[in-house]
Length: 242
Image (cartoon, rainbow, N blue to C red; front, top):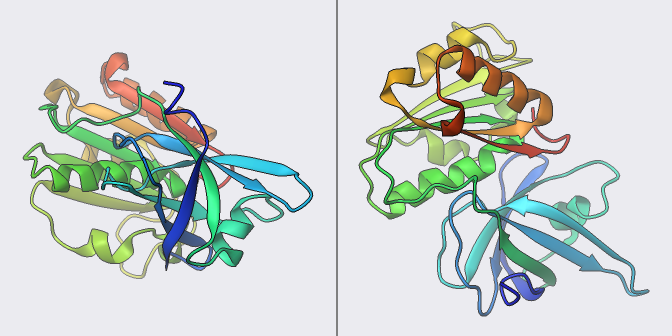
């Protein structure tokens, strides 16, 4: 455990734009012990004068040797995210500590159907689960309900547009819906979860991630639909959730 939680040097291999304000960082971490989909890491930056700042970010992809991926949304006036999205370049180093977390994870050996409910940047650990399912060639059926403010804020847009057997995706928009969308813009509702999710008697494993308000609302709706509390796992993000 001490080895896992020690700070490690990580070198940026590649950076990809997800939206106008979000970037995926591909980092090489020598000696990385591996991780489960749904876990997160701490990232620490150190200034020339010794001042340090750190933040936690979900892993966006399953284990791939000594390479990890994080998707970071710029937080205005933030101490860490502006550097990671606007300044860092391939070859630069940061410090990583992790992986952290053992409750909000999906394991490929699980056989229960899965419901993923993400708000804004809360889709990041859910995307790691989708990718882990694909990597394991799992036949477990997944459903993703992805709530975001408007189409331009969509993470992993091209990847999620590609058809994938056993994965059903519902997009919900809270402020601006694309032209022709039947559902008007608005917050997640009981009807959204009933239509896009699994019936409670299917006993799915439910993963809900986003801002505190989003997570509490979605979890309450799942309970109202009859889902067992022990099957609802939640992860709360900061203000970049929707």
